[in-house]
Length: 312
Image 1 (cartoon, rainbow, N blue to C red):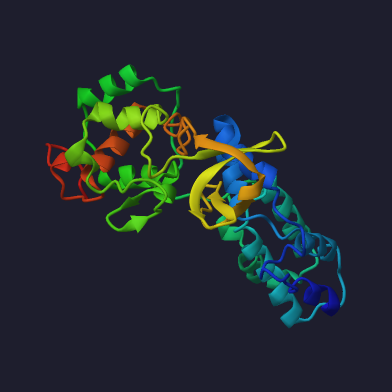
Image 2 (image 1 turned 120 degrees about the vertical axis):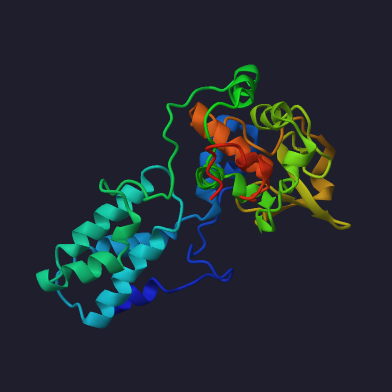
């Protein structure tokens, strides 16, 4: 028991717990090539689960003897941390099933303590997903530009700052864009978006991100001498190699390509921004999102000063 828990603490030379199990660079390359599945791949590879740890934790979930309060505290705390990783759509349910199996062996008077310590509050009732501050209510649709513009331009109904802010995070805008000094920095800063662009401009950039790509955020296609190609955003280069970023959700994870292996390179015509991010929203949610984007994250913005609008 003690030895197994100690093994779960071992880190490799990179400081991770993956014990030599490296992230597939081929999977990273798929993120920008396949818009349909790229979002799921990006999220999964952002924080790859510690596979060896997960194996040990699953095996220990069946142990009913040898536990001390100290060992139990350490073990059940691991589950809450494990939920921070991304492992595909079945990962959360898999970890939760191991967690619940382990809780069967906990004394009844300590069940609530370890249930909470192991991350129960993070999960929905089914245990297959996380509790979220906001999930789009839908029904969603495949938004087309003309219909989206007509809905937003209609201006009917009040706009809610708090809802727009939650939608902005829920559909992952904040992971790549900064607004008011907060958020990601691998896409344009959106603070002044509403002062520079119309509703149509904003919606077109969301629905058709490939139409206009700034040189600052363009991806590069590297054709290698062996006939393969590699896609990524060129971050840096030296005399011998190119350093590229392939995951919008983990921009600091860089892949190096030896210059000697490259036959040619050219700009990609595909935006790093994935399409379809608003397809889960209904018309009112779309209006709240656009209002929030135009406000630059400022609830005192004029966009919320119309009668009946909730700017707080």
